[in-house]
Length: 378
Image 1 (cartoon, rainbow, N blue to C red):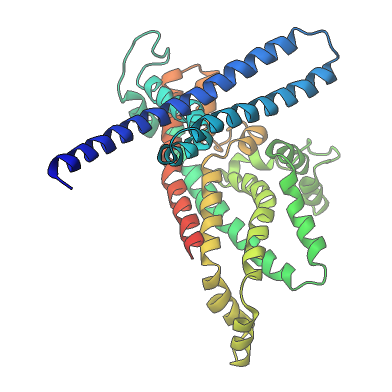
Image 2: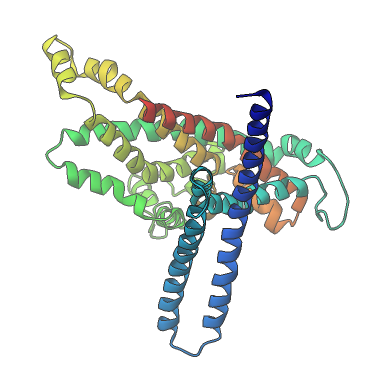
């Protein structure tokens, strides 16, 4: 092949690559756009109808699912009409492109918009009072924010996370050896079916306090009074602040232990029985089998569960807000964000807190994804 032929072929390949990229982007944008317009027009038509609501609901579901399926089928059919080289390049974007576009629109763009708002004062970009990184300086110097950071790091990450992992692992090991494995696991996993707000309401009754001399309907205070003590508002017990946060940590332990238990139980069942039996034959005790065989074998799962719970505890909000509203020294980052954004109406400061929380979660999330990949590769 001559030099000119090679040059011509390279140019042709570059043109094809550029056109393919343009078509990829176009498909990623056109599919969700057309899908939205068509489905939105259909829902407007249904909303204006006089049919019974149950019939409109069924038709809307069928219209939404069926409409999206038809649009995917049409675009896939169009892509398959291209030459094979282009079809191979474009076809994945028919399915992945819309999802990526939706993620960018509903996740990446709002995050960028939030960062932009955080660079202005309490009135946001509308007032035009640019403050730069002033809100971020305030986040790390404000007394209440320092308290929120302390609670998130110490009580929720360094206390709640290890306790949840340890209890989940302990329960998984003990339940696997029990004759009542299914019943015990079901009982421990059951709190996972309750929302965090619902669980907080339940524990509010457990921690409920009445005046001295009145009948105590709260389980904990009923026991304390029965033993001759004085009733206390435990999550609001300022005499032991900041350790009153531990009463909130207990609620999360009750909720999340079942989650950790299920994952650990599945991992433990994947350990080859021959390895454990060989260790026992060699004279290893049950404690040695646990720490020298089981723990190293499921270390990947332990790290994954730990990082998942760390992400959750960094974002903890529901339990704290329902139980104490962030008062009595129980503030966390998320409650401060809510208070500044929606109560104090300080758009710039609230947005800065949200970005700080996002930045704190990202490294843990990236590490978690790497662990998933390593496990899949293994």
